Length: 377
Image (cartoon, rainbow, N blue to C red; front, side, top):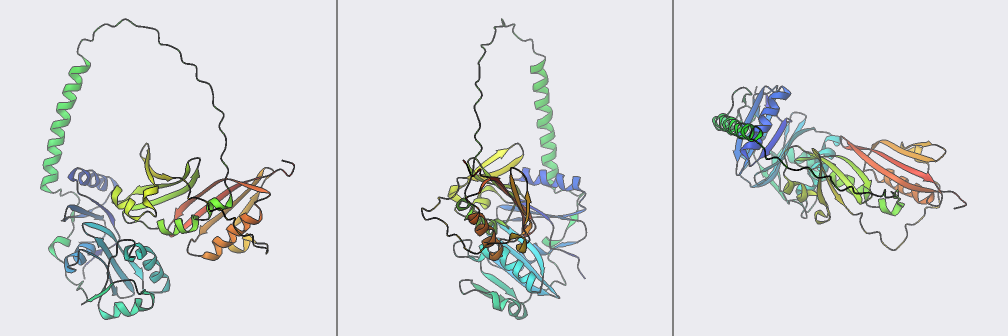
């Protein structure tokens, strides 16, 4: 029985320097095995502790398609490996039950869609197709092939000890060390080189006047798009969205790259042309202005909404209140409709001053801060 690596610490890049950096990071994190193969212009790196072979490479070697979402039933698990050209989109396994199937289709939705990547759904064996038959929509391209034999593995799929570096990586380490030594010598010579004496002059003092900062406010209509946005970015191949928040410039998505490039990110963001990439130290986020609010007002539901029935927690204070949900599900329309209707019903007495959502698996930890509006104002 082969110990297969499915879910792993995966990275990919077309640059050898980046692979070298990630391999050093894998050693620091304590991984014991790794696999490295060149797929087109990309190097695919897989690191783990418990396995001997990489299932993603084994599948890729058996499916002769430039892009695909491959699914095969193994025992009570659905094996899923997806790629688009040289880019590995993901490799994972799901329980072969209703929740597992929902998770798989939610993650792969953008890969299948015609306005996304248009990847065909490839089934390994007829039984695999029977499991997903009821959730296959008409616009998905479906292909069938014989089951892949997981009792043996290809040579490229075998993992090796993390202590054994590829030859080109060892050569690159030597070259980098020589360059670093040369640079150090140049810097040392420059530091100890006699400096010219300059006459000191008093700098001109610039008086900066403090600018009063106005705290931004938002209305419920500014959040009308939020549920669809969170649903579409819950899973991005090669990137992990960590937090969404309102800002004085619009809205922000704070992210962490797992193996994807900037091009991979913008290929998956909704209305990608509206977003701008920003950096804050080592952190990365994208920012855009809030979507244009239509002229028509949001309709007010006459029936009072009880948010506690939908697991929202409301904390009240003298100055305002805070609405929180520890496991907000953007695929549950009832939760979102309840929150939006509540905000509309209380728009005359409250003012939204902040909103953020932190990713937690397939759910979001949602938090809204509102101020009480003085009736005499």
